[in-house]
Image (tube, rainbow, N blue to C red):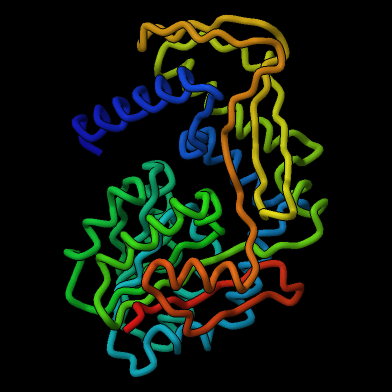
Length: 324
């Protein structure tokens, strides 16, 4: 990443932190959980027994990889596989290895906000699957969408895994999907994961593990403010709190101040005042059913052409195409 790109990301971080911590109620974006430390914490989360999402989607790939690839490229004409929020690529590697085994002509474009994650994945793939064509890109979803038109003239399959769409409330999810639709050609597809509604306790446990890894992951946004923006947060003065509404299917994460306090952020020339038990909203994790996904697709100019689920039906991957 160039120094100019780093400056832009730092400026964006500072601007959004200032905006979120001067709002009422206060909020911070979950995208800022991720840096080198945050990436490692999320890797730990994905290995937790409570965090069923990763294993459920991995099982879908293992169970249905042949049919998934046939839905992408039935005539084996070749395509670009673009993954938004690629992370460590553990699940995707199942498909990538099958693609090469079955002689599909594919170039893989992993995209992530985390430079550390993209660089690590590209390096790992060069060792593990050296014959694969990989072109990693760093950036936020909405910044990268405009680039997708120019990657190539081939068919594009855009993957949004890990139920990352669930970090957006429905109006923003529709906005995101509409933007995605706008940069797609008629034969392009979206392969997208939606975590399904299930027992409320199962959902709560996934975002509030007993070992405290998820709490540390949420608190990493405060650590980043301290490190990158000259903040003076006492991280231990906040608790992580999770709630889930089974009616709306929305899980919400908060950091809650245990006391009345004032926090200086030097680079922003900002003092942030907290009352005792005042919260910072940090993340939503939306859960879905088929009717909700169909509605989101229709509102965004898509139709669902296929779906795949795991043995427990905890999770589903849907294939979207542009509607006529």
